[in-house]
Image (cartoon, rainbow, N blue to C red):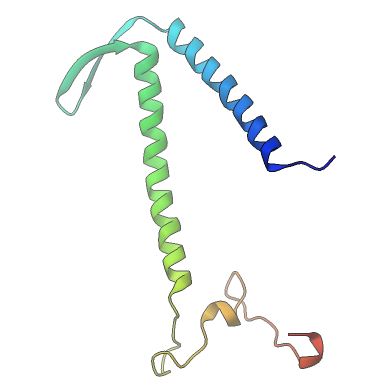
Length: 114
């Protein structure tokens, strides 16, 4: 039987629920208080909550630069780039003449369908 999107969503929901269950167990087993200081703020949190917050901040520190790079690459892909010495807008865009790594694509004859 062929897989469907709903089936994929169902599997993702079950995996997500399992991960949440493991996180709940982690927080409940690490309930002792921990003193936390961050940018001048002081307080106490359960150890499990403090560790989860640290993990979330770590993920955000990785995700933000990655997201910025993806946005940068998408903007570069949308903008037409002219070759040096060509009048603005007269040359083809690099994406139509080069492959993924900048290697020129072979030209096709009309018989090849392209």
